[in-house]
Amino acid sequence: MGIVLYDNPASSNAMKVRFLLAELGLDYERKHVPLAHPRPDWYRAVYPFGTVPFFEDGDLRLGESNAILRYLANREGRTDLYPSEPEARAAVDWGLDAWSTQFRGAFFPAERIGLMAKPIDDGGSRPEDADQAELAAAIDAVKPKLDIMEAFVAANGTVVGSFTLADIAFAPVLWRWYKMPLSFDPWPKVALLRDTVTARPAFSAMEPR
Image (cartoon, rainbow, N blue to C red):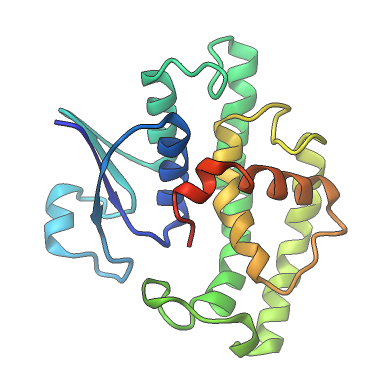
């Protein structure tokens, strides 16, 4: 039995995992999970939490995208992506957890307004078709988090100073914000991070949405 990824093309958390799988050059089977709630009964039977993605590798069953990233890097012995030395690993863990707990939630409301008025499974929508006052307010709410991110990330186009799992976690949503009406010029380190990480061949290979 090989790797199976329960996936949705537009899920940023699933994109993280596909990005890493492409970086690692691993083959896997994709099983489509609709993003609409409630999630299908067949998926809840497989994975009671019902979040996307879910991952199987032989007898191993694993949820939560950051846990999957850590597992895959360890599985492949990729200490460049997830260091074995405690201090360096802690920096990557901080980046992964900061993305999930401090940053991701701030970006989503503007994406919902600007890109998801039509279900993103069906192609999504365009920011120019959204309520512009509502979208502008949601984008303004992201700016303080971008200020913090600018102070947090390294100056060389990565999160912690070299390309790691932390960059894989940040990349999908930062890429999605190319579609949004916000210049990243006030945040040059974040802009460089976005440009550098999303330019990797593996990022395009995972078919971002």
